[in-house]
Length: 293
Image 1 (cartoon, one colour):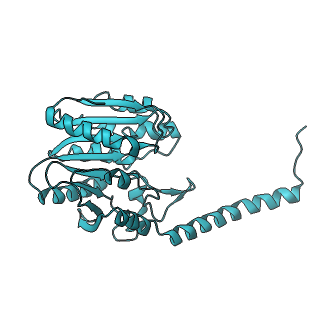
Image 2 (image 1 turned 120 degrees about the horizontal axis):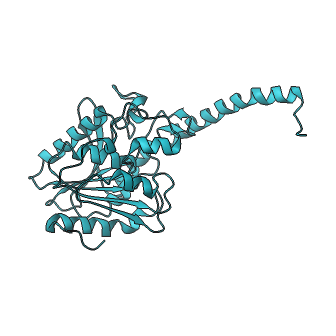
Image 3 (image 1 turned 90 degrees about the horizontal axis):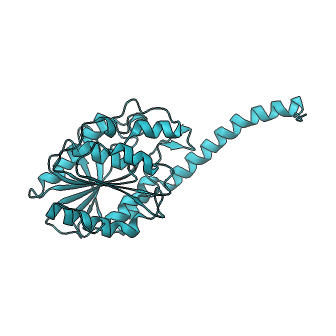
């Protein structure tokens, strides 16, 4: 027969659990405040030599980092980060969803072309700036409101250049945004996603998360225009976006090349392969045919 804790100890344990949870949350919030995720990303961008700007979207100001070392001609490459930290410990809504490990900054540092890192509304230290609220990085993280504001910034960036086209590059949730933005930006010549969350309904079901009722799902939108090249890659060891999920999410797309990368997972080791991926996409956009991947 299984043993039981004495009644008094059981009561003490039941009281201690919520107390411990609250203490853990306070510790997490304190650590987050001390580390200032937005300031850390600003510093990482500065270390790469990127220029920080604030650009108006619809009703949101977006943080943008420019890679001014890139070529001034050719398509503009816009980098879209993943979802960052929408929750703490998987349970509490985060007061600041800014990514703690900005993978896309590292990829942009390897890009010899004209490139920009475009943050989402309320990210990169702007979570408390009106009209932000936490729905914009939880249930509504891929909402029309988020997409439209990010598209508005992309249009402002494109207006500063000659009409030479646009590449949208997204990791994880940034891949969802890349697909949703491409449908609204006719200048788009190519979409590249790495471990992209391209079917948000399948993703929430797979992980048993609450559905993202306030978000758009790329898999339920019409296929992108035939003129847009698409490259969607996922790591064979990715337990966040497993390869079978990506294959199903992209089967209706035109001109979509889908691949699984041996030895990679959700975050590792995309910088190692990025120069080759980018070069192959640039060549494909110029010639109209894939080669080298």
